[in-house]
Length: 87
Image (cartoon, rainbow, N blue to C red):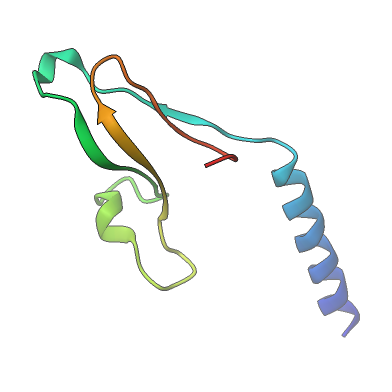
């Protein structure tokens, strides 16, 4: 039981430390694509397995890839989609 309490305390400390450092990801569309501005959702997938596509690593299990997204309107080459702590 003492080991379980220690593990829970370390897990809580780890989550506090991680939340103190905000991460922000910025996505831009290349003008070379020649696309008109788009409306929709920009998704950012983060996975640990470099052998498979991240979209195929999204599951219900604990080893799932992480998915973050933000809605965009008129997203074009001069736009920037930001996925961060405020989105």
